[in-house]
Length: 349
Image (cartoon, rainbow, N blue to C red):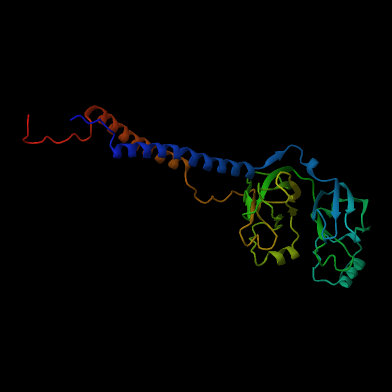
């Protein structure tokens, strides 16, 4: 009796499995390659052609009813004339009082009386009142003797400094090169990227601008706060004390939404690696930190799956399985089944 020639289930299964493997090879490879490409693009610097043009000459320092200055760091070159616009958006009065001692960090545990005594003994470079809902402009000539100094600015209204209303004016000699990096802050408590590469041969001092954005879909507050000490590793247990004793090179608040960028500029005098963290409580402990490598090689990244190996084995494996299935199907088309049925003994001829 005639029976239709059908493809055995095993051959069909092999054909389907091979096709699935071939299809799987491309999305896995493409997704991994896209991630690596974005990581490398963001981690590489943009070299700006005019180094001196990047240093601020006109800056705006804003305040509101939360005790803080924005920005909390200002980078300036010695010899420049700095114009500062002071804007108070809040309903409380503040002061902008700039220390004349560029090598001293004011202790946060000082009482208002101790703070006043310090400025009486060492008169400030600037001492400007900031009434509620006001705006004013003050000018400062940054002379050569200030180069290398970190001059703290505070509000001397009682207990505002103690609550965190302080920042630093960082003064350096004219820079030789200027680099710019783009970094995103993510609600997975990661910086993207977590390594910034300025490992090439550089002429110091260099100025660096970090453009800080918020990763798509993120909504938490984050900061980008950079240690001023090279080759020093912060920990979640010591960073608060550390930054109370060492002014960060820069501290930037991430924008409220993804899309725009906030930025900060700072100057580095020599090679080393510099750690950056998020100062929002718990974020650093959850893994939100990274390193800027200046004039030193990047460490080897953790071994990741090789896209070449993934592609190769998926493609070869899929091709082999698909080929076997195709051969079986071809054999079936000619002989009816594979292997052919065994000859029966006896019976009618």
